[in-house]
Image (tube, rainbow, N blue to C red):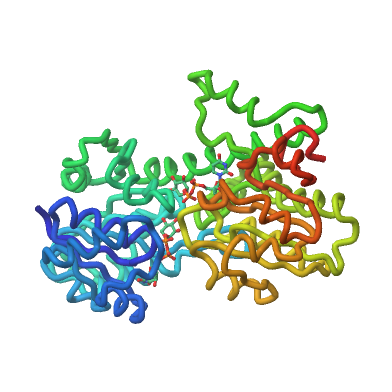
Length: 435
Ligand code: UDX
Ligand code: UDX
């Protein structure tokens, strides 16, 4: 059992701290956002993550987990300080390190005992050394003994608790092998593979993993676009490909492409690192271009089906970037809605979790309370995020409510033949007849 603190209570930090507490460690989670901490102290979750509230409540109850905005309180008796603050993209794609710098400085200013600083935020290669420099500079030579360990996260939003508790691997990087081994002990109970390497390699494993997953998705989306012109079905193509053990079935779902807070910023940051170090990330640039074009492709399809979008009403099912999260960061759905509004369409939408942030991001969006209201008087219906509750709708009711009959299945989850028989003009992404 160890005493540790986690700086940042977002999708990464809150899950990390809570899961460590659930493993028996004593955890204090810190955030500079007072409202967020006060919500957590009152048992209110600042984010939607399936299963998280239950284990937060259990561990607060057990006295293993608490929340604060005070660095002295968080650092008191802590053997480890995990940094899990945001690393959003700058305009040129470079990771914005201001929050990591703020967290490192605050730790340095309040450090009065030896500690291991663990970087869980996704940070550009070489940052680990840089965190050490910040702490040295701030404290001069009197700094208490500290080491920096890189411990990148591989959590998927919507399954973050499971991904933490059942990781495919734990990656640790450090110049101090004793420190890395002590962090490895925190994860022992998970009985997963633990890889210990150097700082830069650990930081690169995170970027390379995310960039590869994003590339797989852009690859299958390019294949989907070619399938449409040749009359092949990309879902079957992906199924056939996935049977090859070298390829595997995961992350080959064609559709509107990827969004979220990780793939977009991590691929951009990796490409930026490449460019600033005199290499040319042609593939990464293509991966990003293909992904963004999927959003435009969806708008083009609706325009082909409806003609001029001005004055048309489009219903959109799903606003978050993926199911089982309230996160709308770089959501394909919201990008497409903005493009439709710019073309003079009226857009109405519904999402089980992401309504509030979506309205803030796209004020012109008219919010509905359920999928059937989204269909009301709509000329076309777009499935943008494949929430389970959209998978078996009453399409008789949908058809009765709609003004038009166009259905664009942005995530290929519905049965196109059935909908065509019902009189819908159905098309998907990479499915024959989808042009
Ligand atoms: C983000 C990125 O998505 C992920 O790729 C990276 O590995 C970690 O940072 P996430 O949890 O999604 O993860 O970040 P976010 O939801 O933005 O939460 C960050 C939290 O840190 C916020 O609650 C913010 O208030 C807090 N924070 C930020 C601090 O506590 N201190 C700071 O100095 C800055
Ligand atoms: C991702 C990585 O999976 C995770 O390891 C990392 O720590 C953070 O970034 P996340 O972004 O939360 O996780 O979700 P993920 O399930 O990976 O989906 C990312 C995006 O790709 C979503 O927009 C999703 O809709 C899209 N996607 C995913 C596809 O379009 N097709 C697929 O086959 C899989």
